[in-house]
Image (cartoon, rainbow, N blue to C red; front, top):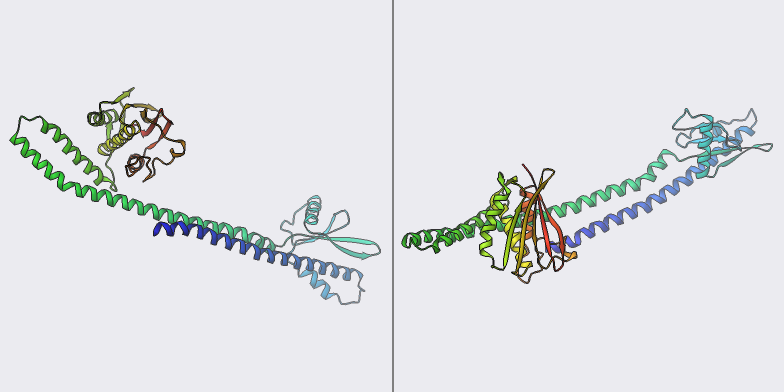
Amino acid sequence: MNNKLNRFLIPLLVLIGVAIIVASFLFTRDVVLSLAMEEHAKMELCADATEQLIQSDMNCDVSFEQSVITKNTTIPVLLTDSAYNVLSYRNLEDESLSNDELRELAMTFASKHSPIIVDLGGGDIQYICYGNSILYKKIFLFPIIQMLVLALFVLLMVLSIIFMKKSEQNQVWVGLSKETAHQLGTPISSLMAWLEIMKEKYPDDDNFKEMDKDVNRLNTVAGRFSQIGSKAELKEECVNDVIEHQVQYIGSRFSKKVKISCTYDSRYMAMLNVPLFEWVIENLCKNAVDAMEGTGHIDISVTSENGKIFIDVQDDGKGIALKNKNKVFRPGFTTKKRGWGLGLSLVKRIVEEYHKGRIYVKSSTPSKGTVFRIELKRV
């Protein structure tokens, strides 16, 4: 139900945001056009008032015409001759412009708004060139600002939903891991007790030594699950020794048709949680065995450069299809007929979240094999 809700909620939020932006843009555009027409009408009124002032008799009352001109305190205006030489101006943001700069500004205004002709009589003509008022500029920018705010709002909503979904997934991971460890604890304790009784009863039977290893192994696995969701304790460990120890254990449990080799050009130290990191190596090796269908060679090489340790796990299996390279670490993704698709996702979580490292598919060729690379900080 939550997945279906999330699937429709994000597109719905985006659609609502787009609808609001479009409606706001259309409304604001009408307001801007109306304001532009009103400002043009004001400039025509100023032109008429200027003509009346020039043509009026000395004894006439011209207070109305003067008020029309002086009450314009928002629209930048330049009065020019036919060559755009500025004769006077009002409401400019910069009052210190030179004559050439004023002429250039007048030409800029004229390119945006048709100059209004002022007929002085006797064939003399002047022009009123005007720009956009501060109010016009604010309204013009309003839909852009609103669009950015709404886009930010939608982005925050989407990120919140993704974060909540990821947080929910993490809680499921942690809960499942803790419950698994808890459920394994009782039978493992019972097996360990029975094994001790059998070892005392049959002290010369070497089979119990191998059984003891496997029971301890089960205990280690349960311990790994119990650490998921908790802060991992990292200690300075030799990477070579950890890998070698794990390879010795899993190698004896694989088919004899699977060969595992390890190469190191030096001894490298890193901050590791040994049980969890052994889990990484085990999962990568098991994944390689599955890719090789139980027959082939796994090579683990450890090198270092620029303070980083590189661990390459290479197999000669069937490889990974190009379309799946970015999916292999996703929880639930698998190409196997049987499997949960959790192994590599756990590997990624352990390497990147617990060890602050990095893991990725370094290379893969169909029918030739795959190389997984782990990067760790060297100490």
